[in-house]
Image (cartoon, rainbow, N blue to C red; front, side, top):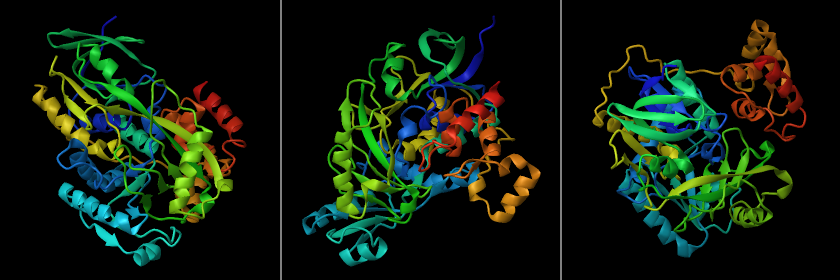
Length: 455
């Protein structure tokens, strides 16, 4: 059996790997993205808070600061091209007392040093006028209008689908086991088949350190930081409009109140180092988050909570992203320690890594037929006339599976044809099962449709 050969192998189909494979698909290259989970975005990216950061929090001169500001500016065009849900809603960092106002000004200076534009200080009255449901005890705020929100897993699906449409290949449920350096690249052994690659990009998230050691590179040292988040019913839509931050600590940006693109309110995250792979949520996490969130928005009620989740972030020992060719072999590029603001930075990181690939000696020639556009039908987003026309064309779009989120049979089938092989894969692509009943009504129907589509 011949061993498939590719120009670039990207390991890890989180938001960074997805952004990179999509950027590389602009060029005449044989590309392969591998992911050890059963679907893309099923690692850290699935539990991302979905915030597009403005860049005010990051230390000037760092890769975090550079790529956060650059990435934030790329999101409006990306969303227009790829059809994922995105809203430039802005962000407000609040001071809980007059004593904290000086820290807000220092944060503004930090943001301006990073190139963040249109920052403005808000008095107590201005803060209440913009966000009337915030606590009247808050002393003021810093408004960063360039900040935004996005559905993180939808972003990853959009990036990978567009890359595949432009010729890249994707292999899920594929774990890299070891490498062997060769004259013209690498021989890669996976749990499925061997692969030869001229260049490898290690975007393996929590496992990037383990992957790097496979070629003898021990420079990537990471640990997992767990964050729990809590999601409230969509009936709270409009409770806040901007993403609300407290002043940050040395470790974290704090407990936030986040309006999602879909209209829910989310609070969190926690930030605790863990030694084992643990995605459980806890009563202690709730007791840590809920009181802090209510200091920002006092009208939040526990009765409106519908679900909770957690994720693990890969935190490096340098305090910054670790993006560079390996000292062992320049054809092996590490993209590691991509903690917050990693989602925001991902499009800019992708552009940067493309330049590193060029410097490795691989020739990149742009495609004339690259198509940046990807579109997906969302029944709930269409006006009544467009819905009627779609249902007339395909009656499957008139058969509602998920009542909470108004998801049709047509959308479920489309999600499977776009790569979903599990209930979670369908859920994340369509939002079926994400409403108040959390799949109590629609899950059996989704399983049946999956069975019909996949045989």
